[in-house]
Amino acid sequence: MHDPALRIRPLTTPEDMASVEELQRAVWIGNETEVVPVHMLLAVAQGGGVILGAFESERLVGMVFGFLGVDDAHPDRVAMARLKHCSHMLAVHPAARNRSIGFQLKLAQRQAIVRQGIRLATWTYDPLLSLNAHLNIRRLGAVCRSYLRDAYGEMRDGLNAGVASDRFDVEWWVTSHRVEARLEGRRPPLDLVHFLEGGAQKINPAGLRADGWPEPSSAIEPLQGNLVLAEIPPDFQALRNADLGLARAWREHSRPLFEEAFRLGYLVTDFVYLRGETSPRAYYILLQGETTFG
Image 1 (tube, rainbow, N blue to C red):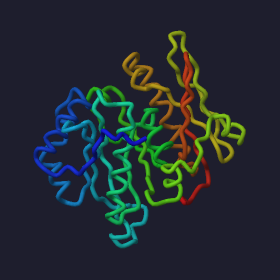
Image 2 (cartoon, one colour):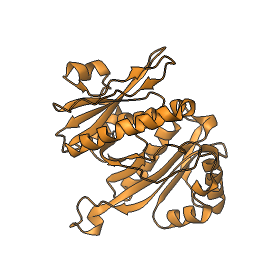
Image 3 (cartoon, rainbow, N blue to C red):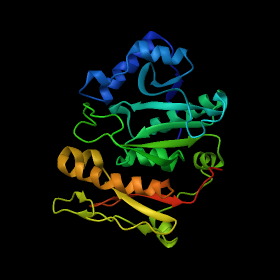
């Protein structure tokens, strides 16, 4: 839903980038070395990158930041045919969250890179974060078939410290029929029951500890059929803050699951979050055999 009080525009000046620095400090608390500085942001913006800010009045409340790259999947193609947009950072100020600002920033980013003639955007995110999964996979229509083990090494900011920095490397084919259908609401959202009725296999149903936190199953079922459901914690950050050991256990559980699924040709195509008063559940939907994004 569009917020009429929100204004999104390109960020181009040193003053703009100083505001981006401060926004990063508000989001990734605890480590100054993780902040992308003004001079680097300006260099990216001047070199063909896309840096957009979401403003309420004159206050920056969100930003998205990316730069040009090349798609390595087809190294034989000429450079122009391999260009992609590497979307490196999306941030919304903690005081402005739960208002679809991130979604609106991604829509504006899509418009900007389509104007550049680019059809593919890629970025990474922690696959155990359900809010990110809901935005990236379910709402935006991105897909994933690549798992990066400890992608950034040891991270020291308040959101990532203490857990290996494994990431999904997602693909957003911005001009595809798939993405257009998601963004325009032409593809009705499916619930868990629809996938189960379609024969989906739950490969790692979680248990609940006495304290209410979900714990990973002791075994992962062999992947069978073309549709499987992979469960993740419904709120990994809250779980991590409560029990770092349990968070690490979820990482060690989900890592081989996704690596094996992608090795076998499965593709993450959807995400379902089931709300519940005591124990919400969250599932990725993985499909085997989808080769087009139309």
